[in-house]
Image (cartoon, rainbow over all chains, first blue to last red; front, side, top):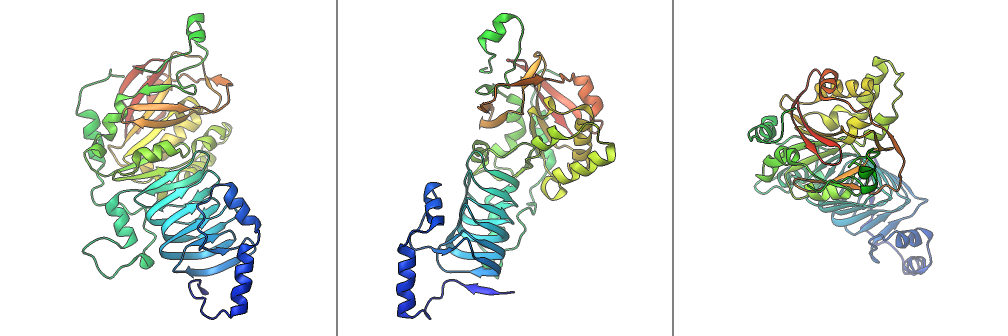
Length: 197
Length: 211
């Protein structure tokens, strides 16, 4: 499996750096699209353009915007990931904040927040303490918002060692120990009210 | 109670649309009872048969909840009633995969029953019977005193613990409601039991159904 370390840029020559700056300052269509749809745009974020297709594990130590295609796993510990309107992700995503405007098939793990924009099309589970979803977004999956379950999935649960976010498993749907169907039933039937059918 | 029928319809003597139309709110006390464990900080596994809505996600956000959104209702409505039982079963396994729905303690069906034919509704409840634990509860709304319902399932969202609201859809067309009676419903879901129902205004009845 290929490994892309997007955080390392030390090998760039000064000319390459100038070229990169020139490219950043030029008008790029996917940035226009992102601006038009209100993408949370970080000027310092790295960008995977629409013509780029990545297979494998994508790691980084900076914010990232994906407008291309990624198959595999995306791990941005402590940073934000934006799947732009043209982004097509077939991968599990681990990040501090995940913003989705494009298509994702995979599980999303947001340590802080997951934001689903109206143009998003997601098939997978979301694990995050805060999830927001705009009307019009397409989503089929489960949203795990139980703080305890989120901590366990993210590997951030206090008192536990040996796990980290980058080792997080795809167990967003794992039931917590307190799942008891009887609880809801007792609550619903324990009080008289409403007319009998 | 804030669910109201439009004045023009109710004063004409013929109710042509129900409180399920866009922009209405319902006081749904039975829903609050289902969600009471969550208010007490207990974890719940909730299955929403409908499409995702930000207001509902916002409502559950911050609570110990696993909210599974099936986005199944539009496909259920489109299912061909000529499909045989085996085909229906296969469709429902795709629409409601075990990985998504299994173990759910609360099912939000809301206005689904007003849009499903008898074979589809029977198959849906049969599928849910295999996925839900005993004691799981379903919350549903049924049009009972009206002839027509909006053409498409309404975008229902939770506003508060006991308030549902229909979002505007921009579509004023209507269709005939199957108008299932409680007895009919019961026969279509032998693995479930209607344990409580409440008449709401606007020609809508709130149901609590137990696995």
